[in-house]
Image (cartoon, rainbow, N blue to C red; front, top):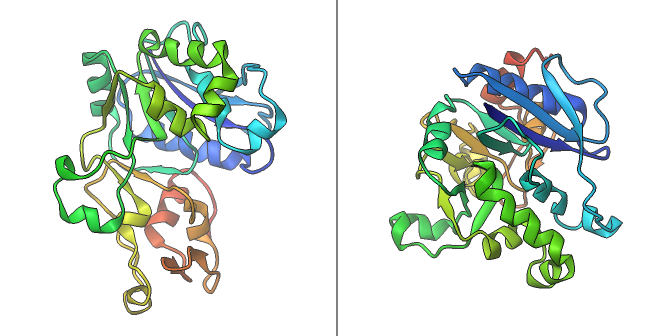
Length: 262
């Protein structure tokens, strides 16, 4: 069976974000699945979400604060014994089209499927094949357990070597994953790259575009999707890509999960 996984620890992400992700997965999968949140606090989870403790990887406190090293726990052998495919999402993504095609790709192959890190804006003028490969972006990935076990085992065998090799989990995956396949171009897009104008154009064109052809929208850095449902006048985003108004299609995404946003 397909197992869909997310993670929540500490106080940065309340339970509502797990519930919203779960609701989006339910809307966009036609096949049976188990939804698991690896967490240290399951209070407030919606019915249907299975809470599991985050495996103890012996991480020092600073490794929880610098890099998402705990994310490597999803590759632990035997963690999901009934899963033929494990699909992992960060909490700050928006799923807007069926996920079945992603699952089909993983079941048909023998590699870890993952996002390709986006290039700076000017590189988008070139075909993807001509852009520098900057490694992986780990907000959304999927794999057959047998094809991911070695990632966890290699990390646990020598954590200090891993820290010396890479400054966070994403860089470690870039260096370690030898059997990776990137999701097809256009299936997943960056919110910052695909939806926002640079300053000063964002002042003239204030409407935030919804990339309707994309199946999954990835939020990396600022803003987060929940920043876009705040009251008018609350600034969100970065220094050069920002807005001050709530985004209606993001509000609708939260409404679909039963979250009051008005």
